[in-house]
Image (cartoon, chains in turn blue, green):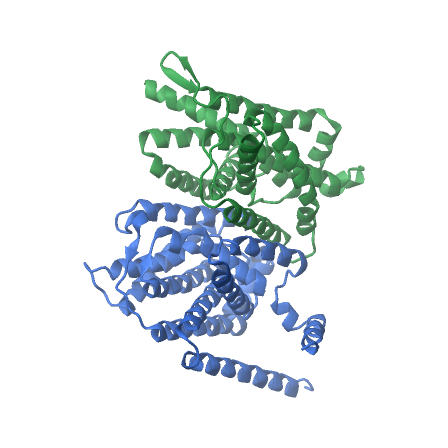
Length: 325
Length: 290
């Protein structure tokens, strides 16, 4: 049992780091201007979205190109319920948004999750494009003109809402994947699905549960986003760029790791805003995203997080970089 | 009845181009086992290449298509080894990594095109534009007819290459088994790279024809990636022969939906049909193999 003190020390250090992060994030709004606060709010949202995508993409091993559909479902549910005809308050729209996204995830999850690898990716993509087309022709979604929401101009409110949601997502995912039987089952089916099934794991059920959880978190962020930006249209909340970013953030941070998506999400979103403020638009951001994916796949398949933890080479590299300052 | 016939002709003519669009994609899947998300990207870039060739050098798209084919053959041949490297790497999930890699290439193309050429649609002019052939009740635009014939010629060329040449035999051997083909003296890496080159060349050529019939802008890529997926899934991934039927099927579906239900619903119905096909017959409905 020589390793026990080391284990304990590791856990204490980790807990201290997490507490320090939470404290730093909660007092941040007191020190920054509203422009930086908006960037921080966006960074929290993208980190949370990357975390949600990672449940299916990283842990279950099913690459979904359809998560923009769930983001859009959340955004549109909130927007439609908050229109003057119904006039629901923001918090009461969250539950219908989550329930609807779970229902859709289950309805499309059971048939599509029988498909493997590339077929699943194509099916989810086709589904998301279908929903995008649907949103542009329906009346209730306002068609291509989109919908406006009642404006609530309190940056602190949105920052803390995003912070609480993102923190809950990360802690929930960490607990579910690293600390519960669900986590063992889902990793088992990722590594070898027939073997997992032969051990008595109901793989179809587990996959759909993971998909529904991922969809619910994505929809929740969609709802908050709609209220935050106060105007949505089909392309802004269901466009392929939503899925693109989620995929890239997870790949960059580290597929199938708890903190990789947070790292990738924050890093890419800050880069995005930096390019936006320097060049005046974000068009140049897309080719950069593309190059990042290609390079990560070629040279760093385990993501940036693999440089930080568990790899001696990575630590040496970081030490070398830090020694130059 | 006249409308019905006219729609039938339109559907068949577009179907021919979809065949040319998908046939290389199928070959790549059969040989490299890579689902290339960038199909639409190659289509879009082919269209732009034709646009610049006709605008700057005044070369008609029906002549420049051969230049575009050669250009993209070389580009694809250069990129091929990277695809091969990702696909045969020792990562946990090389198939998903390859998917992510081509997704990155696609994003790069789409973003690069948006950055360089903005959202504007550009049309490619040909000497055949605006000329018609009237056969009884139906009117056939000469442009579409020539594009259809050109697309079929390219596809025919691929079949001749596959079934009547030593290189084609090597490609078919690879599609059956990489290891065994390698043992028989096939240079797996080189042939794979050439297959990727042929695929990009064919897809870019289809892009030239599509841009000449409609127009080209940086965001059309997604649409054609999904069209290629649709045809490929209907034919059975990796099945080159099945594409001939599946391409025509999609062309007809799109034409009839556009005529009888409304053009704005055509994408919705095409995606819905793709989704249903995947659920009902995920392995394709027309058999498999090269």
